[in-house]
Length: 199
Image (cartoon, rainbow, N blue to C red; front, side, top):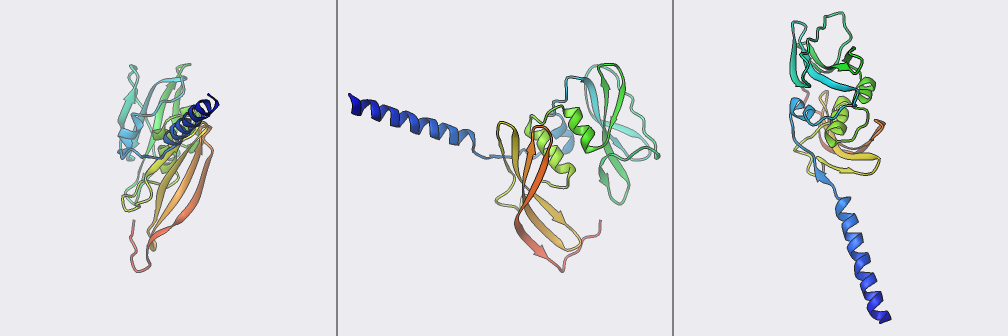
């Protein structure tokens, strides 16, 4: 009887371990365009009406909008720049939102974006923040482009590309659900000092 109990306990322990390991396994990151990535974002409950807007110093074009209210964002050359700038042409993106007090919000900085998210609770939001910091998916990085979600953070394996000398470097990115960001190099996997790309 005791041997049977020990056997059952052992098998149950192995099952729990394997389930825990399965739940903690890395998954492939979604390969999405920015406007498709934004569709997966779940901002703070303070914002029911919001949009991702592209501005090229001529017009404000809404790339994606959520909510029933008609949004009419306006920006000018004197306004603070947003994120994902175009080089050298000149353009950027920003979030435009109406809060619960019916006040307009132009969200252009990383700190404001994290407040807009409320909490980084989807991998798309974590990837968005990583992209703000210059990291992204590179299909040439065979050990990258994966992520793991833990209780209070996301771990992402991404890349950063330098152009003054063509270098591709792998990074392990940790993004707390509070928005705290940390990057650690995982090694250079491609380097060619003879290739320089003007951007």
